[in-house]
Each structure stands twice: as structure tokens, then as C-alpha cells.
Length: 494
Image 1 (cartoon, rainbow, N blue to C red):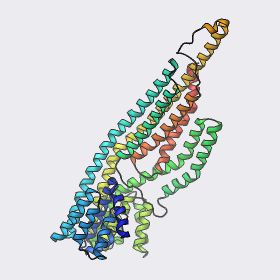
Image 2 (image 1 turned 120 degrees about the vertical axis):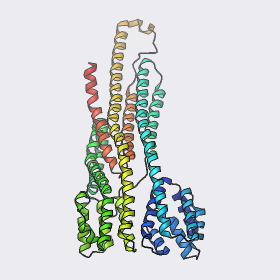
Image 3 (image 1 turned 60 degrees about the vertical axis):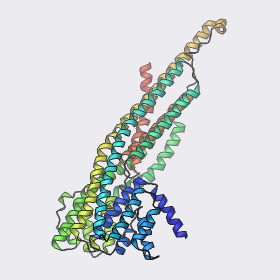
């Protein structure tokens, strides 16, 4: 009874995330289709499928337990689990699976067909997300420019007429909310996918990025706090940006390498499968026969994998190490499909075709995402520099103008003498306390820096370490603007 309740809770939790469910469902069906090419028994296919770290594996695990432990037929088990599934796509798939079993259709034919259908649906859904991402990327840029200009106009207006601090706070708060709202919209509209993988150490670039972030990250934060309190926010931003830069550079290099590995993976799997089938040899021998000159990025990893297999090391350990060294989730999913499908008696060329098509489709979709997201990420950098510079420059103009007004008022009061009390106080062009306005502008720069760090990362995807890359750029730009704009404005106003 407790198992039923816990399974139902996990099923409902999984069903709530349709984006993650789609990617895992495609992987799960492709994996089962690769296993079925060897005409393995249904129980064996499910035993392998439920061990994979996919969110959708919980449904097949429930079906398997109902069939093996409680003695239900598979068709009836699928129907019972379908009633508990919250996602419509999962419910429909389980019911179709039940109908296929009842009609006597082979698992190989059914799974191959369902994998193709889910692949087409995933591609269509991914492309719709890219179109939405492109539109929201344009809207994000327009949103930041519009809100920043509104705040600037409102700040200048306060010099003409005293509209109260509440008005400025309201407008600045609106800027805060809209900036983070824009970053959140970019996050929700971007396609969901898992790009990186780590089980042990991971790729060398990612290890270096993590080490540098753990070392220089806290140093940067402490330096930013100290300099912010003693020397100003400009040096604080600059110190934090420079401390994040080494980790960000290695994270960016790791992302580029993972992208290249994913693009070469389909060719590798197809070539090894075809050579192994035509020569009737093992995968280790087949890897030695293929021409690896076209696999420039994967070649060092393949060479180490082949050497380990040749030295009679456990194949599972060899492939796990190969996956961990590449650091790619696509390598993790595709190679497990490939190796397990062949181990269960599948034809290497058929299994290679299934897995290479899976890897190629995902790589092509990511290439389309790169074309859409990268221009937005690059646009955000000068946009952040321009908007933060504008806010700081306007603040300096207002400070200088306020000083001139204070000097003029003091001079008028000294010259008027006893007549000063008779001079009416006009409701415009009065000197003001710029302390609160300065704090609000500094807060706006901080919010812009954070939002413009998150938005490019959400759009391009990848490992969370990429936040260090974009964060270093945005913090450095903010720091340089805070250090350079005030003296430049002073020279212009002088």
C-alpha cells in the first residue's frame, strides 16, 4: 500500500514537467527500440529500461512490478499505470502499448514506430520553442531599453518638479521586476535539454573551471564586499568580474568541446556499427578499422577507449570512463543504447543506425538553437554596457546640475540678505539630496548585471558554470562603467 502511494506521488511529480518528460521519453523509447532489435524477451527489455536515469522510467518500472510481482498481464499493467499518469502523452503511449500487446504486435515494430513518432513530436516541439525564444529575445532587449529610458526620464523629471521619492522607488522597483521577469521568460521559452554529464571527475576543462571557481569565487566575493565598502562599487564589480573570468573561460571552452563531440558522435556510432557488422568483429576491433581523421574532437577519447578495451578491462568500466571523460549527456545516452543493444544480440548496423539517428537529430536541433541563441547572448553584452553607462552618466549629470542649483541658491540667498524670506519658493529647479537617487541607480546597475548574466545562459543552455563566463563579462562592464563614466562626465560638464 505504501509502495502504491509513493509511486503515485512520484508519477504525479514527473508528470508536472512536460518539457523534461519529452526529452526523457524520446531517449527511453529510442533505448528500448535499440534493445528490441536483438528480439530479446519483453522482460529483459523492461529490466534494462527501468535502470536508466530517465524520468519516464518510473512508468515502465510500475508496469514491470505489476507484471512480475503481482502477476498481472502486461496489457492490463499498462492500462492500470496509464490511469495514474498525469501527462497526456504518457497516458496515450501506455494505452497504445497495451493495445499493441493485446493484438500480438511485436515489441520491435511497435517501439521503432513509437520512437519515430516521438522523435518527430520532439523536433516539432523544439522548433516551436526556438521560435518563441527568438521572439522573446527581441522582446527582452526592447524591454530593458524601454524600462531603462523610462527610469532615466523620470529621474530627470524630478529635477524639474519634486514628485517625491516614492515615485522614483516605484519606477526603479518596476525596473527590477521587469528585468528578472524578462530573464524568467527566456528561461521558460528556451528548449529543455540536458547537455553535460558528470559521474566522476568529468572533462579536464570542467575540472579546471570548477577548481578556479571554488578558489577565486569566494576571493572575488570577499574582495567585492571589502572594496564596495571602502573604495566604491566600481572596483567591487571589477574585482568580482576578474575573479570569475578564469573559471568562465574554461567553462566556455568546455561548452565548445561538448558541442563538437555531440556533432561527431553520430558519425562515430554509425561507422563502428557498420564496420563491426560487415567484418563480424567486436567493437574494439571495429574502432581500430574506422578512419578517425574526421573525428577530430572525439579521436583522443576513442583512442583511450580502444586501448582500455584491448587491455581486457571490463567493457562497462571502459565505456563509463569514456562517457565521463567526454562530459556529454548525449554521449551518455547514445553509447548506452548502442552498447546495450549490441550486448542483447542486436545487429551492430541496425543498432548503430538507431542510435546515430538519435544523436544526429539532437545535434541538428542544438545547431539551430545556437543560431538563434548566440546572437541574443552577444547582443546582451553591448546592451548591458550601454544601459548601465547611460544610467551612470545621467546620474552624474543630475549630481552636477544639483550642485549648480545649490551654489546658485546659496549665492542668491547671500546677496538678497533680509529679502530672502520674501522670495517665493518655486516648485521646480530646487536642489535635492542625491544620496537616495545614487543608491537607486547603483541598485539598478546591480539588477541589470544579474539579469543580463542569467538571460544569455538560459538562452544558450549548457552547464551552469557558464554563468561564471557571462557573469565575468557583465561585472567587468559594470565596473568599468562605474570607474570611467564619472571622470569622463566631469570633463564633459566642465
